[in-house]
Length: 383
Image (cartoon, rainbow, N blue to C red; front, side, top):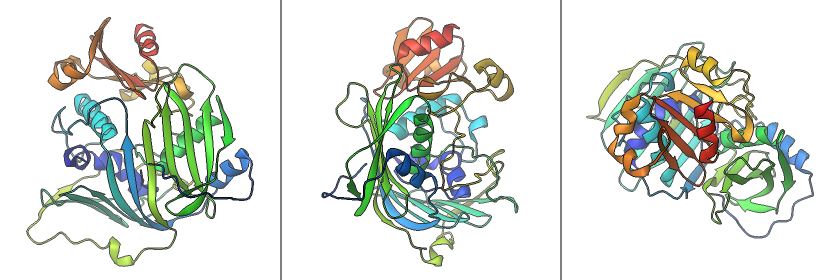
C-alpha cells in the first residue's frame, strides 16, 4: 500500500463509510471443505440484504490484477484531504483511483454501531488511522506525524441516501447484487471458509457481453449474513481482477477505548471543515444492501449524462453492467506525463484499458470510464 494514494483521499473515499459505519474491508480466502444447509440463491441474497451486524472487528486484505503495474499515489497532483468528490481535481481523481486499484493493501477495522468506527490502513513502515466517535473524526498518518480533525454536524446520523464513495466489500457486494436483479444470473457456488467462518458463495453472472466483468463471487457469512468477501473476475483473465476480503472477523463489539483518539505528542494537528455534501444524505441502512450507488452496476439512471453534468458536473450514460460515467476533466489532464505513458492514442483522445476498467480522455476535456470495452466509451463520447 502506498501512503500517498490513501491519505489524500481517505476523507473523500472512506469518511462516508465511517459516517455511516459501513463495513470496510477489502482477497477472497478459500478454506477447508464446508458443508452448510442448502439454500437457494434468493435465500442467500435475502440473508445478505437483511443482516443486522453493526458491531464487529476484523482484519482485511485487497489484491488487484488489472494488467497494470502498481502505480504510485499522487502522480496526478497533490490533492486536498478535505476536498470532496465534487471539488476534486480530475487529474488527481484519475490518478488516485488508478493507484488505489493497482495496489495491494491490508488493514483492520473496528465498529460499534453507526457512529463509532476505527479503520487502520497498514504499510510496512506506515500506518494510517481513521477514527470516528460521534461527531469527531480523526485521520492520523504516522509517516507524516500529522493528525487531521473534522467535526461532523450534530445531526449527522444515518437517515438519507448514501454518497457511495467507499470501496468496501459490503458496499461493493451491494452494488453487484443490485445489478444481479436486472441483467444477471444468480447461482449458489461451493460452501467455503472465509476468515475462518463458514460462508455461502453467491455467484453473479452478467447476461450482457458489453461488460468487462465475467463474474462476481460474494462470500456471505452463514451465521450472520454479513458479506465477508468479494471476488471480481474479468473477461479473458484467469486470475481475479479484484479480490477484497476479511482475513479475520468477529461480530462482537470492540473495546470502547479503540474509538478514543488523542494525537501523539509532537504531531501536527490540522483542523478541516467537512467537505460539502459528505454529511448530507447518510445511509438509511448503512449495513444493508443499498441500491443507490451511481456509476456502478445496478444503478438506474433516469437522467442523461448531459443533464447530470449540467447539474453536478458529472453524468451517467446507461445503467447496469454497461454504464459509463462521464465527467468534465479539462484538457490539462492529457498533459500528465505518467498518464501519457499509460494511455494509447485513439480518435479524439487517449485511452487506458485494463482488464476491469476502461478510461477515455477526450480532446474536448471530458473523461469517460466504465467496466466496458473501449468501443462503448468511444460510442458514448461521440453521441
